[in-house]
Length: 313
Image (tube, rainbow, N blue to C red; front, side, top):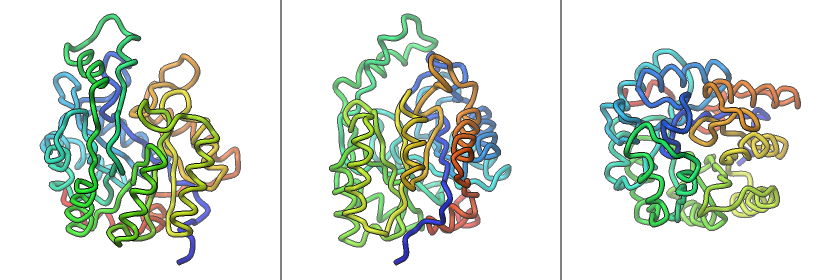
């Protein structure tokens, strides 16, 4: 097939995630109204894809409850044409059944799909704070020194078949290390993943590949060797590496992901005021470098998505 590349950069914005906690930034949205408002603003700023998690409206703890998801999914769909991408990663310590509850209910155009089990260590973040807004936050973080983020071959196959084959969902294949690319290649070889598929290369999570530019080059070379012209790719990097890695990815022909799930900052030592602020900064950089931003319609075409009229909400 011809390379899945229109020459435009797809900007994904990950609105809230399951890593950062309310103490870390007043801008991190966790109530449904705030998640919806920030997602809509991010789309208006240029994000073609909105990657979404849900939080308990009372205390900000990650929740898999489909009822909470529905409080913001409908509002976002009504207000924007952006592609809605629902997590299958959920939050730490959720079972696979819990992680699948909202995606199976919503049947979105896209879902994230982590391509391997891994140590997922965010416990060093706890040392940065001495007071907490909610009592769940510190133990949630510190407990990750003994946490394995489960994504077995059986889990991945189940998600591909139930959401992909069953409901026409396509995936943001999240690859935190080189081995995850080979896991993806295994499912491509079995024809459970079909082109054009979307690979999200992830850097800077403790337990995954480090945020070094040579790792970005090697991950991209490995993906090219494994997948040829059958894939599109994007990059996210945690924390301060977010903007530099995204910029480098665009210059290498890739797409980008920003958002408060991945970094709370807009510059050195300065917290971002919103997801839209990060999207707007990334867009400015890309356009100054001569790159065009993909619209939601263009992203749908590039990624062969089913369309917003075929979701379950």
